[in-house]
Amino acid sequence: MEDRYSRQILFKPIGENGQRKLGQKHIMIIGCGALGTANADHFVRGGIGKLTLIDRDYVEYSNLQRQQLFTEQDVIDQLPKAIAAKKRLSEINSHVEIKAYVMDATGISLTPLLKDVDLVIDATDNFDIRLTINDLLHQHHIPWIFGSCVGSTGMSYTIFPDQTPCLQCLLDATPMSGATCDSVGIISSAVQMVVVHQTTEALKILVEDDHALRTSLITFDLWHNHYQTINVEPAKNSECPTCGNDPSFKYLRYEFQMKTEVLCGRNTVQIRSNREVYLEELAKRLKNIGPIKLNTFLLSIEYESYRIVFFQDGRTFIHGTNSIEQAKNVYHKLVG
Ligand SMILES: [Zn+2]
Image 1 (cartoon, rainbow, N blue to C red):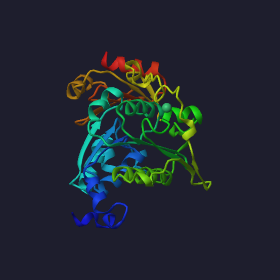
Image 2 (image 1 turned 180 degrees about the horizontal axis):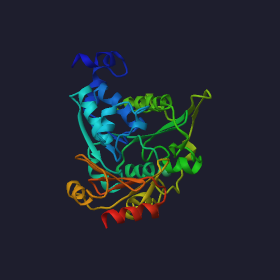
Image 3 (image 1 turned 90 degrees about the vertical axis):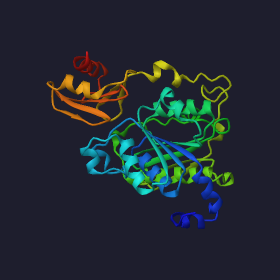
Image 4 (image 1 turned 30 degrees about the horizontal axis):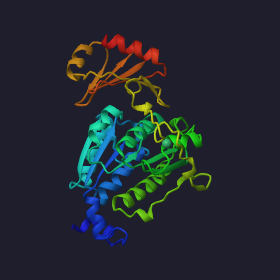
């Protein structure tokens, strides 16, 4: 075994045996923002075998304050976050097999990628995607670690399908509204606090030290010096639409996966289409409309007071509006 993991191997609960297991495990991180990049950094430095990164967005200046794998050059190049993160992570540890996907996390897009995944890290920023993950991983019996942060607060909880309450059970028992939007800002230390809990629990799962697992939900407010662990076992609900006796898995329905949505706190609407986009062709068609930036993964164009970003997989961001109707008008003016 290489010297690079020597300090981790010296740590008794991991040891040579745990390190070997880690090198055979496959982790998927959904979301490559603040939580995703910090989680990925830990796993790649620690010698995970395989890492799959999923993200639908690209790097912007407002990300650099807390999204630790990105640089100013990534912003200038308008690189998708998954691609920029993979590039940086490969420089950190070239032995880890890293796959990066620029796409929405839906039941349809994630299912083919779940084969041999041992654990999923939730590094998303909204409950629609988390509830999709909740339904999907329940179907596939894959454990996952929920994490969220906003302002100076955060929380984390590990979900084992069929054993613990699922995210839907938790939401039904404790309203978590307000933690869904980034409009109140965030400090980077709150991100790190969630990440240390996610990565540590992940390590325990991956080296199979089940006795060490934390079974409670942890919640904190760093600015107001508040820490709490909550036993949420009583929240498990036999009527739950995800983990109950008669599940409906509503977040995996096709209509839900294709809906147009307002991206919270971003003054942006995402429109989904299932046809693949040929960006170079599109660039030729739009060249007289406004200034265009094009790379392998996306095309962005300034039009009236909007900035429109087309992704290869058929998604479009309309920046500059929170109105779905307005966004659809702009979209149809440009692509018919
Ligand atoms: Zn449930």
